Image (cartoon, rainbow, N blue to C red):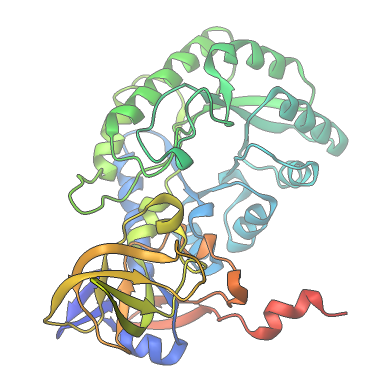
Length: 412
């Protein structure tokens, strides 16, 4: 078995004891299964195997260098959204010609770095960005490959904070104006117009909206090819979600089937940018129970992890499975909360669950994506350690922050 499963009653990661990991690394600690990450990537890769393609892992989901190195070694490309992510991807071993650079607000320094690296493409968000990339390419004496990120005005049917493909969202270029913007791109020096791209949101479980997006991109691509554009890629974005209890999952195979049906016959390499679906199920936040607090009719399970460690429940109303590492026979209704001084500091509310005892370990599951990546030092709390389970063992891939780390930039 791969991932998180029970052995002799204890929840493990690839058979490795979470109790032992917590003893060595302390809590809270993020624990990742390298095998499951690689398996999830290979499923996406195989699902698109009938066409020329590249699976570009969305590094914003989890940019730990050890995870990036594993995916680069497995053959993945990378989708980056900042200069820092670009540097991380290159350091981790992603070839520059397997890297696409997304993001609505690229700085001039970030653009120059992408031009210098000769990345596969900039996913361009605006006409102004086109002129900036053109200037940077001319200054460097290079040709920069660009794809326009178009906004198809399609509802991803997801949380509004992570919906990016509607007309009122800040992302992309109105698809109705795309033809004219492509003509402008073709006229600018230093640019090689190579692709079409869209990304309509995250945590998507409805294949139909992804198929609709691919249909819009295919229609635009065919028009551009007819007009003489030398396109090379069609990038359908990412956003595949993780099903919560009672929801139907969307598999890589179902996703690919829906998308590929709309792009049949196009002489283009198909790019896709999954992140959450690759690393999310492969990670858990392991936290220790500090107290079982009874208050009126409420039971609060107080943990040593807080919203600074995992903000998704507070920010997106995300529901993560939570279970004791060691089995408990008593079930009940409880709120699982952290120590941060905010009422929004919770991981579950009124959750029916196996009730832990004080000092027990809990595993907050499906936390490999947008967990550590979005963590902070709020309340002057150090960020958690990260552990990668691999080859029947585990290693610390990011140590817990110290007081000296938190104050280093404040000292003369």
